[in-house]
Length: 205
Image (cartoon, rainbow, N blue to C red; front, side):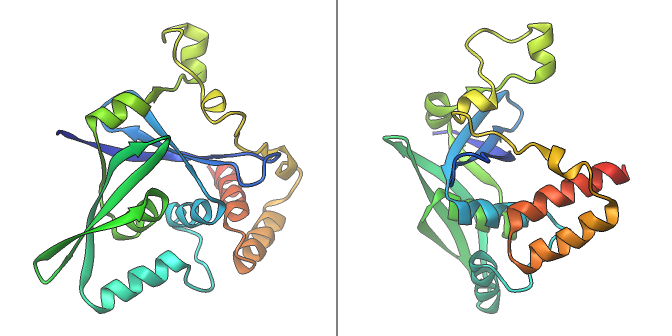
């Protein structure tokens, strides 16, 4: 079966629902998105890997795994989301050591967290994307009415799992934001750190 490459679109999460996270993967050269529900720890690990400016004071579990692999010349070559059963995605990590390839079963969230750290591509099969892929409608498309009615928003897709309102940061100065960012990283609150980094970047643009 044909493989389709996926890119990370982002992570949606809720301020009102504890542990409600959804990783959104987008089809390369295509309109479909693949939503995957993940845990809080994995969401933090993926978020910190996406934010190059945020360095944890101690290695996370996935960072430790990468360091371990590097010591033994093991490289993650790619991740394949190969199965979908009862709403649960199953993935394989394709790893290589001394030109010898191994296929390792893994949770999809862990596999993607590692793929980010190894700069490895993420793939899935056409039939999985056909079954679970959706079309997400942007705000502009909603206004123009260019998408078909069956298309849904990220908020609908993730059942009210929405990005946090950044308004609580709007009254903070840049100095205060940088201070909060340092504290969030020190406390290993990486989701909070990512939001602060976004707010700082937005003001510096």
